[in-house]
Length: 174
Image 1: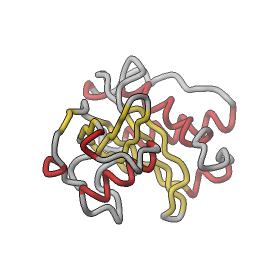
Image 2: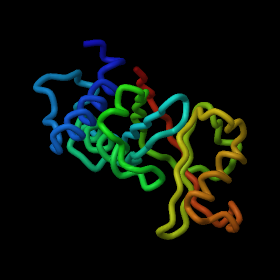
Image 3: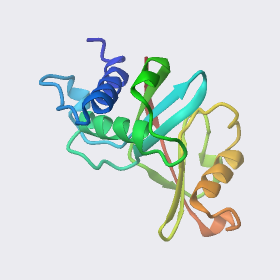
C-alpha cells in the first residue's frame, strides 16, 4: 500500500466499520515502521470543501500512530461537538486528511511562528486551544494565535500571559 495514502485509508475504514457495525477495527497486522511510533494525530473530515469533523490528540494517547488514527477517526465522525454524528451514507462524500504531529515546543515570540509551517497551542492553566498549520485563510501568526485563544476561551488574555507552543505536522491526504 502507498504509505502516503495509508493514514486516510485507515481512517476511512475505521469510520466505515464503526458506522456500519458499531465496533472499532483492529490495527492491520503489518504497517510501515513510521506508524509504529507514538505521536499525536488529528483526523479532519471535509464534505464538499467544508469541515465536517476534526478530532485529534496533540500528545499521544495510544500505543502507536495507527491506534491514534483509528480512535480519532471514529471520534471525528461521531463525537465532534460542532456537528451531528455522521451517517454511513455520508462517508462516500467525505474527504479525509490525517495530520501526524511532532512533539510541541515552547516558544516565546510570535516571530517563531509561521502559520504555513507550524501549528500552535495556546494555554493558561487547564484552558488550551490548538490550531493546525497551513489552514486556508490563516495567513499570519497573530491570526493563528487569536483563533487558538478563542478556541481555548482565552480571547481577552494578553499573549504574554499565555504559554505558546508550536509543532509541525506530516499531512496525509486521500
